[in-house]
Image (tube, rainbow, N blue to C red; front, side, top):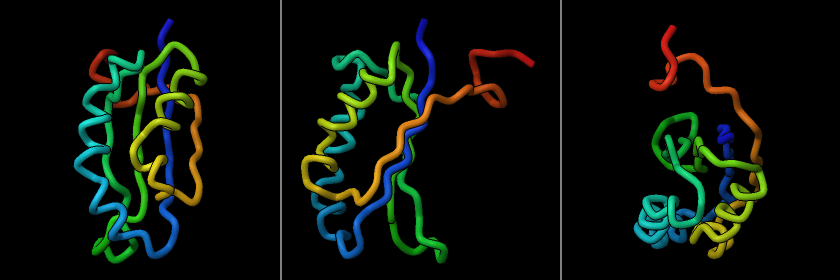
Length: 103
């Protein structure tokens, strides 16, 4: 049974140019997630406190197992480019606001 996973990734300092250069390929990769056995439900960059610069990535991924998510994330162009300082993947129970659930 599929479940949801929250992916929190934090950029290394000084990687803005890398993020901007790799972003189009990263976004294309996210759109092909079903080819990798996962489905990206939500995603976008996290922002610095002043909201003036991207400093990480937040994804909600639907998959059968955390290993599927780990494999998908490890092949992300951002990961391949060495953008992230830290990546955390957590199983997540999407209850409030989930369009597939009522109530």
